[in-house]
Picture (tube, one colour):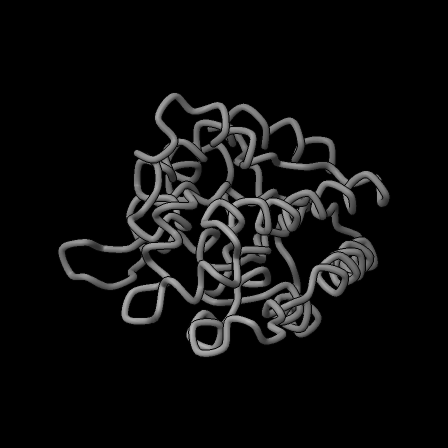
Length: 231
């Protein structure tokens, strides 16, 4: 039996495999997630430290308190929560000053710190880009029960949420270039998909089970070579 590659994953709900369960009408861990598929195919055993709702600031704090790491590489996957806004507050005061949960500069700076922390314990960091938002679905989702017109007044247009989230994914690539870090480009895999909306949950943000299968297919091509470079 071949030796399975091992990696640690720090990330948010996408890394954890959370989807929106339309039958139960709530978020839940979907099975199989992309990590499940990789493990079942004896390709990569991912030790999953991802948390629902986590930001990169919280993730770095978790990492600094972690014990011994089994994998030779650490996947770092954040941004979806970091770039999000308090939409209820925006709906109440669209002309006010509103900041995302983690401002872009702090997000980028903390990613740099995360990379250094991973290298300090002798592991290889691998950064993961963000899956793209489906802007129309996301806008409809976050404006449920609040004044959508006021949110649109703040944004200018619904498509602005796509571009805003994209800046965080571009920040991941900037950090990777500056620090000489390998990248698992999940975003590109989704942009190349023939039917991108079919890969997303109704919230326009979380990949559904088909989306996780799509991530797993991309990972099967990219991750083994990235991880073997660390051995």
